[in-house]
Image 1 (cartoon, one colour):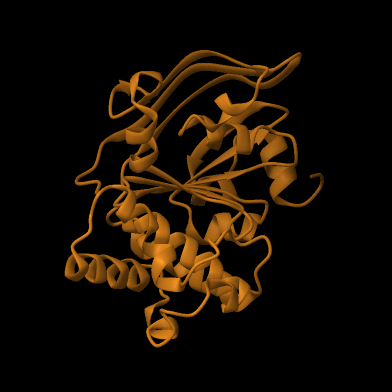
Image 2 (cartoon, one colour; image 1 turned 60 degrees about the horizontal axis):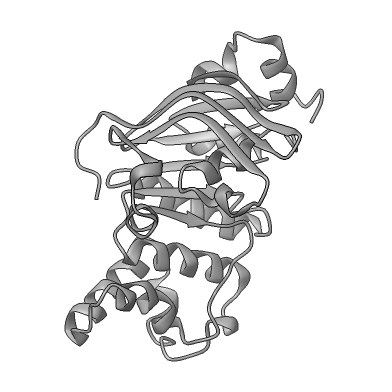
Length: 253
């Protein structure tokens, strides 16, 4: 887990192309440990491309090209073994993606992959992860049921628990509440606010109110560029760029 403060990610002169499409242009920013960075902007602004660069998922695209530098704890992510990187940097996607197994086995899946077969320890890890995801009380008597029997909001928190079980340092959220009702959304947000004590969280969201509720800092992306990044209070009350103000006020996007 992340301990202490400091710079977690450092991004310098980052450019990304998918074929002829220039998806990110000259991005420079730092992400602090133990904070929630909200990333906002209209569709096709580069938000998800940026998020996926942090754990190198963009490299799955055949026409991917990148220049610049992305560092995690002062180490170039390109030089980190992919298995190690994706243990350190977990991803929660827009739509819940439970595995076709029980609730317990969903959370235990990644732990077992990393060679933890101690049953007592595994039970402790699963319960701890479900607690952190604010799901334990709802599923403690349903651990052997199929994960598909859970509601959409519960499935999303199950995916968060599955990510937490392997003890990452960073959690990437890509529109995690886009398909959830307000009550489920509130539970996911509550979990995020508690988790930042131990983790660095980067949240891509199209919901500017959500960004304002949970973000310590907010970054505004537009047309593949980072327009500005600042404390969330300042971004939402006194942004420097009029385009940021226009987006937050719903004038476009």
